[in-house]
Image 1 (cartoon, rainbow, N blue to C red):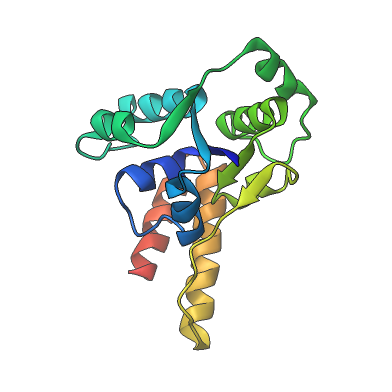
Image 2 (cartoon, rainbow, N blue to C red):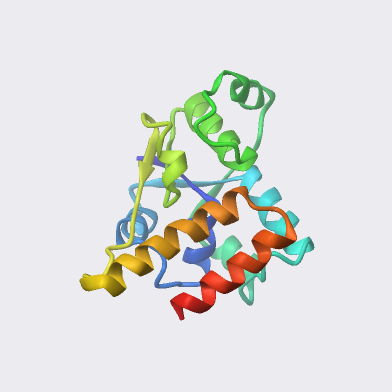
Length: 171
């Protein structure tokens, strides 16, 4: 199978994070699969690192070089394909990766729900959630949902304050 990993999965793999879903870990580790890292993900990583929004794991570049990853450059044909995509998701990096997998006949592995709306060549992988019951579980679910919406749509100081308040409630 030929796979393209999204940025989150790549970073979780390189950090050996428990956040990496087991299915993704198995697919990436399988020597029968060719696993690509997009130039788009590398651009996204270095951009976020330069803005202070991302701290890279120690030895990031060495781990990347030693990992089981092939490189996928960005081509003009892939970039052009973005214009034909429906607007299920507005993140330019995610949209570009979707265009790449469509153009190159790959499967995109992602843990990002909005990207799954593109279907077809997108495979959503999730970490098995621990069983939760009762009012506390419902509140955690609601707070997590609101956090995602605020993160996705929010840009202003008021949203930053709301994010902080909601995070404190989930601790």
